[in-house]
Figure (tube, rainbow over the protein chains, first blue to last red):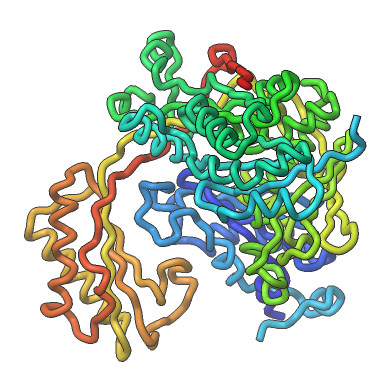
Length: 117
Length: 453
């Protein structure tokens, strides 16, 4: 079953120099494990291919049901050097939420995941 | 010793809601008002102001804020801690003193002034002594931009603020203190936490991180269930009710708008986060993977479990330098084929700039309404009702950037059709002050505390 990240998580992003961070938070605690399994560093790097120049790092915060992604080279130099509308990386958060996951039907049913509309 | 210490945040950056400090002091009982004015490049703006007028160089909004909260400070004993001093904490203190005298509160303020963070006058001495101040992000040595440096300040920790409070200050003004120290210091002072109470110090840092962006933890900029967040027009700024064991509750005054819940606080916790296991400050390294959040009633979140460990022997240094010029021009293209028209205008503009012999370090085109923020992820926007062409250039040659700004308006008559939205006139050339983060040995930075009556 296709599941949209925007239906199972919320997010906030910010900046440090030319790096944007995206904190991705499961909307329900029981959905965190799915995020940890599916929203991998490689998956996110693939998602943002062409939009960022550097590597992607991922950190886990199971205590907050959250993952933290660092997107390096995401801000056109960052800070005041950047010419981007989103120079402070404020909306990389919702760009990540555009990701669509493929979840086995059985698992989706057990977790009561909302199906993509 | 107080059982619970209440610290309220009244300013998330210089330019935040001017009336929030007063509302925080008058809206309910608090012990401390914490005001954070400094962003990464604020110090350089203040440095420029000081060069023009030696009595300036601090966040002037703070003087108005102090005037608005004076009754609370004088009559109810609320203490104020702010990094409003910028590059001139002494002048900031004088201005606050003058305002107190004007309001008949002369002699009621004891102002702690924290200095020692300003390294601008010591840069050459430090470089000569082998402190490279290399850029933390790129590794380049500071010598590559030395002649363009505008300001240089070490981020200092809680120690000098604690000292000022111990000496009886009821207003503490610092220069480049870390944002989080402004919250942690009064807790150290009230609860007598030692400089090795790692878990408590880390808790103070986490409390600071949660409230340092003002309403961003109490419903502002909150994506979670955003439609249901009540009365943002009257949003309540956050406060923490902290206990000696390092646990605390995040809440806000009754009768205010916004919301404090586990999701709103979680969103703020992950904001601007790096490695969550090591949130590095001058006082302690906090481990954000140990934080426990629990619902504690309406608009109350209990925070506990926080672990910390000893800090490094370095301080972060915020250096600002002149990095050339930039300008951004925009035009709006309307349906049909809005995006195609904007794309053609981009191509035409680039060709003209090239023919004019204008060369830039960076040229960036964005199509607002189609792909500016979400790139290709936004999908096909060929049928968009309108698209804004947003064209930016950056370079070291001011004249070339200036010449670029003359090339936007002509496109209205001599470029692709259905174009509008040029009423703002020619783009402005902006001088770029860029940020250079570096590290320095703690041992060479000595904070100085003075308390004036």
